[in-house]
Image 1 (cartoon, protein in one colour):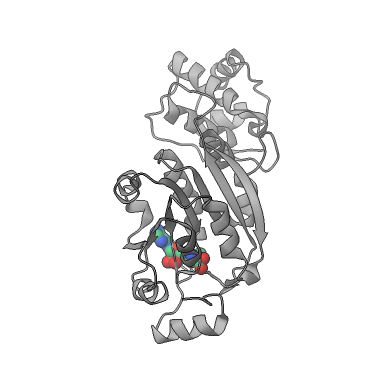
Image 2 (tube, rainbow, N blue to C red; image 1 turned 90 degrees about the vertical axis):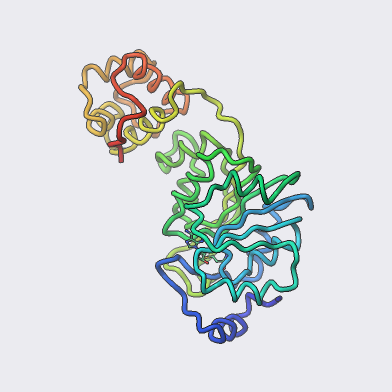
Length: 296
Ligand code: SAM
């Protein structure tokens, strides 16, 4: 069904299905007609592509993805939207809708079963309440996907795509950069959605690649990153010592042996610095990635 960006069509559709939007599920539907084609073009660059979409809503982005891709699998948590999607996307035979919480799915298995012999990408207008957990799940599970093209809140986009060493960088910036090359594609105003959220948004694309550094213990590496950024105004020594309850003089020695100044701020450290710190901590046996994470 075309015109899913027409407000009266959408209102009529939703009222016919007795549907009211759920704020808790982050339901802000795109009504700006230029956004979905741009997102779909950025995500699907050849016909032999399988797309995993998270949160299709009423299908406005799904419609554009279906026109370009070989197959789309759309995972929607809200079961009230399943009959709506059945109506809006009835013309397509290359769509599978799964009514599930994406956080609960075995995505490696889903991709292997649904997209044999296809290049696979993820594309979504993400529910904002759960942006970081979804992105970290997609990255940490090492899915065989080439790119992740997603709409997120503008602030999150700036953090996720921040340059190494910049003020905007944070623990999630470092985590994303470990797995992927991030790129901010374009900004989207809050008026492009119904209902309009309080903040503007942006579309980013993560291009997955092999990590450039190889920490011995990946869990410890991520604990170190979280601990270093936990109190980002403090020095890396003070932030890590308080987050991980470590003795400062011992930690100071570890940082120096890893070639990192204890008085540096976390935002100034590279992924290689974090890898050397976690390797030095592992060697000194003062922390283990298997311990419970106390970092922020
Ligand atoms: N793609 C549509 C659009 O652009 O208009 C809707 C995007 S809306 C921001 C987010 C969608 O994600 C909603 O349809 C919501 O029900 C769905 N959603 C929320 N949490 C989810 C979860 N854990 N798993 C799957 N879908 C979820």
